[in-house]
Each structure stands twice: as C-alpha cells, then as structure tokens.
Length: 378
Ligand SMILES: C[S@@+](CC[C@H](N)C(=O)[O-])C[C@H]1O[C@@H](n2cnc3c(N)ncnc32)[C@H](O)[C@@H]1O
Image (cartoon, helix red, strand yellow):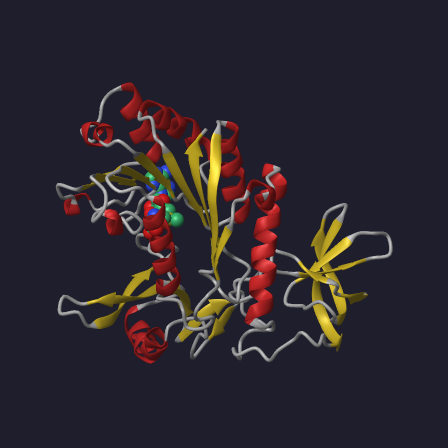
C-alpha cells in the first residue's frame, strides 16, 4: 500500500497512518517520505511495514555513509542528519520518562543535562561480527542472512583496518558459522591493539562501554554527583567503569558484578564477583565482609547500572540493601529508556526525589540512548 511517513518513532522506525487510524511502523524511512510498503506483521492497533519502493523521498533524507545501510540490521538512522537523530532521541526519552513518572522537569526545576555525540561515526571500540565460508559481516535486518562487509562506518578505523587479517585468520581456523568479537585494547607499553575473541555460538566476553568519548562524559557526570568523602556501592559495576574514577574523592568503593575482577581489589575498592540478588540477600540476612567499609562513610551513594532489562525482580533485594545501609543518594543509569524509566518510577514511589537527569548519546545512527538519574531521599 501507499503511505506517507509523518513522524519518526523513538523506537527508530518512521510511521504513517492508515485511514482507519492504525499506525504503520516502517524502518529506515523519514518524515515526508512517500513509500509503497508491504505489511509484514502487527497487532490490532498498529502494523509493521517494509519499504517496497520509495515513491518520493523526504527532503530530510541524506545520503547514508555506509554502502550496506539499506540491508544491514545494525544502523537505523544513517539516512538522517545527526541533529535530527539527536532531537528525536532526546525528546522521545524525555517524553517517555516524564509521562510515565508524571514528572514535569520544568515545573520541578530539574534540568536534563544533554550529551549529544561528539563523533557520530567510527565511535565503536568493540564490534561483534558473524562469519561463514570466508565471509565476515553482520546479519540482515530481521533475518540471519550474512552481509559480508569490508568496513563499518560506526566501528573505529583501527577495527576496520584489522578486518582483512581477521578474515584470513578465520579462513584458516574456523569451520562453519562462527562469531568473532573485536575490541580495541591497550598493551602494557601503552600502545593500542585490536584483540579478537572467537566463538561458535553466541558467547561474548565481559561488558565494557563501546563509546569512549561518551563514556568519558558519563563518568564525569557520575563524578559530579558523588559527594566528597562518600562510600560507594556500585551494583552491576562490571570492571568498575563508573566507580574507579571516584577513588580520588571517596572513602571506599564496593563493586558487585557477575564478572567483577576480584583479583583487582585494593584497600579502597573491593570487587565482589556475585549476582546482585545474591549479594543483596546476604548483605541483609547474613553478613558480608564488605559491610563494615560501607557503613563507615557519612554520605552513602548507590550506583545502579543494570543490563537492558533493568532491575526487574532484583529491585526488592536492592531496596532492602539501600534501607539497611541508609543510602543517601542513588545514581540510576540505563541503556534502555523504557526499563530505566520504569525503575526510576519504582524508586520515586519509594520516596526518592529526582535531583538530576541526563542523556548521553552512546549509539549514534541508532535509536538507542543512555539515560541517567540522580535521586536523593525525601
Ligand atoms: C550495562 S553493564 C554496566 C557495567 C558497568 N557499570 C560499566 O559501566 O561498564 C551491566 C553489567 O551488569 C552485569 N550483570 C548482569 N546481570 C547481573 C546480575 N544479575 N548480577 C550482577 N551483575 C549482573 C553485567 O556483567 C554487566 O557488567
């Protein structure tokens, strides 16, 4: 059917309306496009479409930098200028949170700090590729068809430069479909190198932020929020990305994560390898060796940076911990707006007051955005 795209949804797709009021979401379209679409799925009130033919392009369209953009399942927005992407992303995230939380940031006098991307291309320091039969690339959108690539416009240039040798290595050592994760890493003499990890079946190494420039802004924001002399509990803390930078101003840090590097613990930061739920249960029902350090400080800050699914059923266990430790400030960071907003609301219902909000564009060319909220006890 023929459709006029009128808006861009914060989920990434363009959208148009049928005469009966139903909305049709169409990926990789722009407001103002006239398109012929095939309906590929949907529910009662909305449908999903795929572009069959671009009848008249929107004036908002720009030429995608990537030659694979039309087919690749990675980037969603290379056909839009970065300023448009950021506008849709930040307004969408603000609206989603403020509507769910019934929170008017202007009325409450709480500013949203905004951190658009300094560099909208070549920002990824880590990529995951699929490979088979001498080819290396990404999957096509919604399918597992492999698109062989020679370069990726959001990967760093050093990762791109490594692709020919990775392909040669793959041909020698991998048989059948495989995955490879490439990441930029520093060597012991301070040089940068590309490291590779090879897998059959999906199994990637521990989490690290993919965008160094934006990660720097996030770490600075966290640093500003934490009062001098605090003790910090960093749950879902990974390798200590958000708390290691605080050591110059806080008394001590306890960092809990299923992948925490326990052997890197020092007098001032203790890494605990545990699920958050198990550690919280132990800290409230039994005792954990880290408790003494946490109870020492005047101001006690809890950092929460869960995976995309949010706090989920861990929340009840975390609540027991922040009550027992008399936490005075919570920083909640999330890479999925909806789950982050839901968790913010759960904290607000438990009498936490929003003190600051921030948005960081870690993922230009996609609809994803990193959100953060600072909350204090009422
Ligand atoms: C979004 S990452 C944040 C990591 C870290 N704060 C950073 O900035 O690099 C989420 C982290 O949660 C950890 N994780 C996921 N589920 C967990 C669980 N149930 N208990 C503890 N850690 C978990 C992952 O290992 C990952 O390091």
